[in-house]
Image (cartoon, rainbow, N blue to C red; front, side):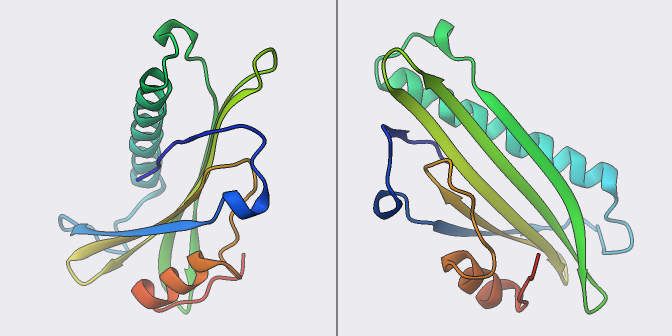
Length: 153
């Protein structure tokens, strides 16, 4: 899940990488049947959820819903390690008002793999514009612990 937070010129100490893990049924999907179209659908779901959560955070902090016009970008791809398929979604949501120094900004990455009958998702997010590394952050540890792989992207 992608969360949003309010920040004003956050520095490196105030935007730690947070992680979460979700395990759900793969509903019969296997590495062989996990297609680019399905990954795009998963990306769309992540986009809709993060936009909804961001908008609610925006409103909860006294902002007008009519002013909610975030810039969002999402990209997804498969990454193969040792013959195993990993779905990766990168997300960035940002809403900035230069006149009030008000910013909502979140970067996130979700790494997913099918393990047996389950789809295991490791999500990493940071409440800032700073990107998230999967090679040297708490995200790396969560990926290794839950998916048993080290990704060098």
